[in-house]
Image (cartoon, rainbow, N blue to C red; front, side, top):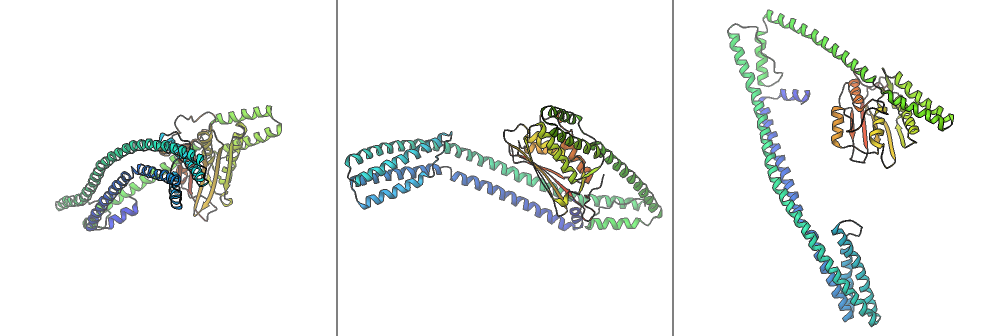
Length: 508
């Protein structure tokens, strides 16, 4: 509970506190019952629709029989009524066939559906030929077509029976599973109700204890004051209820003693000095930690990149080599220059572009990079070496060694006092457990080394520096839809408007 919530709670009288707690408990019980009812109702609805596929197959079989009977009637008795009945049943059967599978899927049920659909289409075509031959008085042809259609009719019926039996077995197993789930839901529902009741009773006991303990302490202190111990004082609860008012009134009664007031003043002055010293030490510690974190960079990355430049000089013309070495020099100069100071967003973006260029030289241009930067955000100051480690993490843990084209996009937008920076890749993705592990403890993904061709500045370093620089939490967030669906790292940096685009930070 935040300070505003605590102040609101402290201002409530005892009657309203108890009434609010009882109301919340009743609402929790109601919500639990509503959730249980919804789950049970949903499971029941699923049970009601388990055998719907068998019903559809029965309807398909009946309609097929009507088509066969209509065909026989057209062959035996040619009239407008028999033709109308035949075409009507044929259209109904075709409509039912649309619900069957027609794709190549490695599934017994789907394979049977596809066979039934294909044979049915052949059957309907042959039946149509028989009807046309009958109307054209081609006796030999309509007899042959009718016999062929009858054989197809038998085959289709056999397939429908097989499919119906197979689906019945599957649906029966599913029905039993839903029954077990319903029983499991009953147990879970009971546990939920028990947990809600235990939590509600525990909170009621805590509130009762908060009421009884101050009254007990007040009675004990009043007894000691009656015996002449005038230096005692009841601790202020800070609340505005009846107990808080009674406690403050009691303290005012004994606060007139000059010796006691002088002792409190002296104690407060000493405590203030200690707090100032403690705050100063904490500030120095934060500065030391910030300088230490900013100074981390792995020389292996620079050495490997320079080796790549030497190889490029042998293999290609001097112009490309010159461009590569200039980018390397800019990247190295930025790291050395900004190691102990902050940087502008534009400088950070330029460092990322240099880094991507170096990697594309080393890895034959496999990395596709795009950026969308607001012009009015380029002058905003931020800690140095923040964006490059995030992009590096996207390369090493996201798009490296994937079978499709790797892409990285950098977006910087400024809106409503917030600078939003997003680095997104289309790589391997990340599980929710890995995201929680990185954000909570700053760990790298499992099985991935922090050294080698890396700059050595990990996500934990970036997150720690941002939190110390801006003196607030939850600046960084990581989202991923799952395996092989990419990852997005988002920074939400608070800005202080009207002061030359300087970010709102405490340290640094």
